[in-house]
Each structure stands twice: as structure tokens, then as C-alpha cells.
Length: 164
Image 1: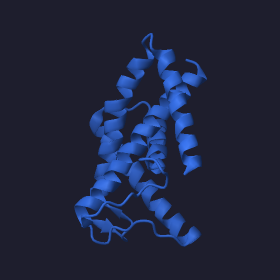
Image 2 (image 1 turned 45 degrees about the horizontal axis):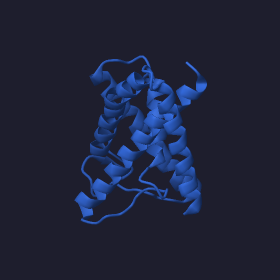
Image 3 (image 1 turned 180 degrees about the vertical axis):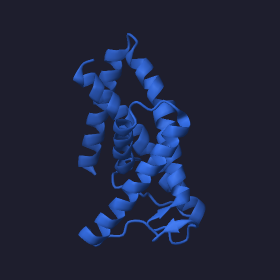
């Protein structure tokens, strides 16, 4: 497989995870506080941290096929990432970007069992639900069209961000 195809597949999966994360963040704000608050750092409906988290999960669990193992592993890894990032942001940059102080089963208001399980489900959803159709698409005669569309989309996103 060509590197250009591999990168375009990763862009699709990264975007799917970043969008899923954005929806999760918006839904949390709406359900908990009754307000719409765009939690993303971009001018697009994407939270890149979820995309990077997925790339880490795919690297760590490349050989894991069982759903339960993938869910548990995704839950543990994403929780560890969230905890580490919370310390780095607070002590390295004096920033607290989230808190779980009102959530049950939280640890130091940095992580929560509920959010950890949601992250595990998101990882499972993208890896088991989104990745197989993407792989199937790239195995068809439409592979070149898919690669072209992904790079056009990427250019659009970059231009959009630069303009806003």
C-alpha cells in the first residue's frame, strides 16, 4: 500500500474520531448544563485530541480483535492519557480545561469512570464500526477517488481554519 493511501485512511479515521469527540463534548454540555458550548479549539466541528487518541489506540491495539479486550484497553489507555494531560496542562501551563467535580466516580476531578467508559466505547466504535468500511472502500476501484476526496477535504479544512 502506498504511503499516500495510508495517510488518507488515517485522516479519515482521525476526522471520524475528532468529530465523534466534538459531538460527545457538545452533548455533555447540553445534557449537564442545558447550554450549547462549542468545546472545540478549531473553527470546525472537530476536537483533535480525540483523533490523536484514536491514532494512539490503533498503534497500541493493532493486533487486538476481540471487542471486550479492545473496549477495556481503550478505556484504560484513554483514561491514562486524560489523567497525564490534565497534570501536564495544570502544572506545565497553569491551565485547567475540564473538571469532573460534579461527576460521580471521579478521581481528583481529572478523570471519571463514566467518561472513561464513554472513551472506551468511542474507541471501539471507530475501530470496529468505522475502520472496516474505510478499509473496504480502499480495497475497491474507488480507492483513487477516495484518496483525492480526502486530500481535497484536508485542504478545505486548512484553508477554513486559516480564514477564521
